[in-house]
Length: 481
Image (cartoon, rainbow, N blue to C red):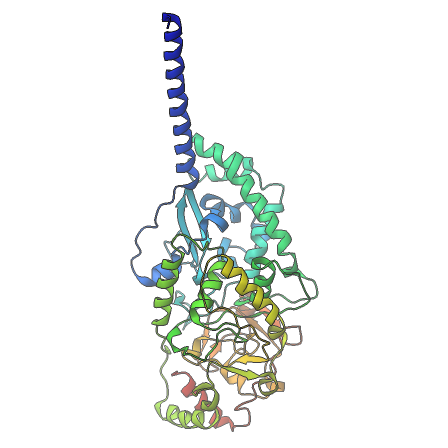
C-alpha cells in the first residue's frame, strides 16, 4: 500500500470515528432531553403521593410543565373566571407549584399529567373564613373537569398558541438553554398542538348545545370512555354523574360491583380502567403504581364527621336506620344493583353504557396485555346500592348529585330543590351537605336545574314518609357513618 493510500485510509478512519462520536453525542443528547426518564422525588407521606404521584401518563398524555404553567396567563379568557387553574375548582395547596391531582415528572423534560386525585379529593370548610380542608379519596366536589378539557383544547386552536408566544412567556419565568429552545420550537410545541387539536375534535360532543353542563364535581365518564379510549361511534346518550368517594375499598366483597351502574366487577379493574383513561401506559411501572394505589385505597378510612353530634338523637336515628335503610345499605344487597323500577332515579347515566361497550372495553384492555376481571358484560338494569361510609361528605346525593343535602333527600320529590348550585365548599351541618343557595354559592358553583336532561332528582323515596322529627334523628345518625 502506498503512503498516500495509507494516509487517506487513516483520515477516513478518523473521520468515521468522529462521525460515530458525533452521532452518539447527538443521540445521547436527544435521549437525555426528550426521553430520559427520572423518578419523582420521594414523597413525605402516602397522601402526598396520592395527590401528586405519577401514574405513568406523562409520555403519552403529559403537557410540558412550563407550557402548563403559562397557559392560564396567556389565555385567561378561556377559563370560567379569574385565578388560573383555581378557577376550575381544583384544590391547590399553599406552596405547591401544581394543583392537587397533577403529577410532575421528567421524561426528557418536565411534564405534567393528571392522576386519580383530580377527581377524588374533596375540599370543604367548616366555617366561612378558614383555609379549605382537603380530604383525599373523596369526591372531587369542586373540580370542573369539563371546563378543564375545554380550556386545554380551545387554547390549542387559538392562533396565539405558537412557539414565538409560548417561548416568550416561558422566558419570563425561567431560562431555557439554546438546545431546549430549539426542541420546544421545532418538536415539543408542534407535537403538543397537534395532539390537543386532535383531542378537540374527539371532545366536540362535550359542548353539545342541547345538553346542560356536567358541572363541578360531575363527569360524563362512560361517554369519555366510549369515545376517547374505545373510539366507539358517538350516540345521543348523556350521563353526567358524581365523582365518587373511593376510600375504604376493602368493603367491596366478592359478589359486589362498582360504578354507579355496577358496570365493573372489582376495585382493581376500576382503578386500571381509570388509569388507562388518564393516559397511563400499560408497560413500565404500571403494575407497581396500581398495586400501591389499590393497597392505599383499600385501607384508607372514611373521614369522621367534624362537628359535634347529639348522642341521644343518634340513638333514635340508629333504630330508624335499621328499620328503614339497613335492608339496602347495611346488608347483603349493599354493593349490588337495585332495579330501576325500585329506585326510580334519573335513567340517563344508566343509558350511557351497555353490554356491547363493555365487551369492546375488555377486549381493548386485554390487547394492552393487562389482566383484570374487567367490565360486566351484561345489560345493566339498575343502579349500584352504595355503602354509606363517610356519607356526610358525599353531597350532593343520588348518582347524578341532583339532591343537595341529606335533609333534602328525605323530602318528597316535589319538596326537593328544583334549582341549586353545586361546587361551593362551605359545609352546612344543619342540612348535611354543602351550602347550595345564596350569592356565594351562585358565584362559585354550577347552576343545576333538575328539569334539564340528566339532572332529574326523582326516585329514592325511602324515608320520605317519616315524621319530621324522625327525619332529624335519622340524619343525625347518618352523620356518624
